Image (tube, rainbow, N blue to C red):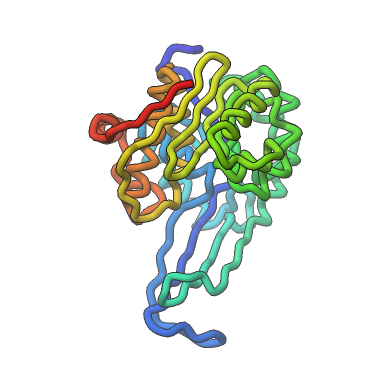
Length: 317
């Protein structure tokens, strides 16, 4: 590893400009509804990059944006929080990936539109133009959104850096099962792990069996989110479950993104596997205590304080 000042994590994926419309009263289709509109920046990988940077980790993020006001606002925000997006692809005349959702008075989504057409500009040629950035990273983080490009990167740059996978969803996990041997780290939830392993995870022994399966593929570090039951971790020499005993939940959205960011911070700072799980879970707990997908006050000292406040249940095998 390079010295800590020069070492960096690389995150690769889509940035999304999110627009949410909240209906004030009874929602009426085919009509204009009074309410409020909220704009935010999203995308799993963009969220990972922001959380990582907020922790003080040296973070580069390669994404694709249109040269529009939405894209410019994402770039400006990233610069303000020290996420380096200078290697991203900016497409003249294209629309930055955008998600528009309408929610009724109960908070239920009644309709949505997603525009990610610009993603097709992420070609193999563009990837190879960033070979120095990829090979210079300590770790490279992905979601499973673009299986074709994901496959190209992990095969072309195999052993040039270490790859970390967040499957994002069970459906997307199914598309990248064959690529698992290329990853240093995987972080599925229980449902994603079931798809990747091919069997149900209903008991602790099932979860441990999944860990052994992932290890047999050559994966070095496995983290499986078990929701209220904590996080299972497995390496070639350590295995266990870490569970916080009391967690206050306001909004679970973004918990997985912040966990992966915590793993990235921990890797750059060479924390032990147990400390990695604690820090990553503390970041998730801070995230779900706030209505925003990314806690606006996420930073290292807050996370350290949260780690000390939590009563941990730790089981080792």
